[in-house]
Length: 160
Image 1 (cartoon, rainbow, N blue to C red):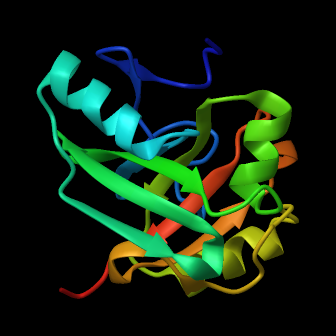
Image 2 (cartoon, rainbow, N blue to C red):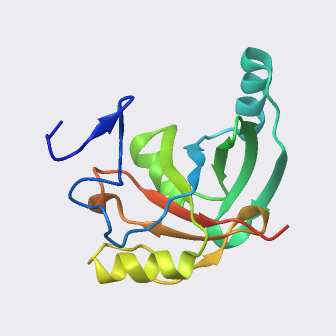
């Protein structure tokens, strides 16, 4: 690690170093890890049998072309995603890459401010505006080319 980045207990101390005082998005926590699957029922059974976990909820999000199940794990979730058809983003992902991690999702307090900051930084956005997500959230995606080949989802939790 660079000497410019003070490290305490193997984590970066952002109060010092090259970005101290900079304006950047405050990520609240890892909201969930999205995993694309072909068979949601089978995968939920596997999680229940092997790991003893069950979904908090399951719903169809037609606007995103998926059926999702959210499994709580600590302060985060595992989001299992089954495409509603082959010509959806998750359907195309499964066709080209197979089952596996689809995206990482970070919670933000104000998604509009986060998107505004990313636009100003020249980020490659999949969504220039927030849209409805599962569980009453508002979401937006950042293109994988923007950060180490990883699709990033920003999630503004619901008020409920």
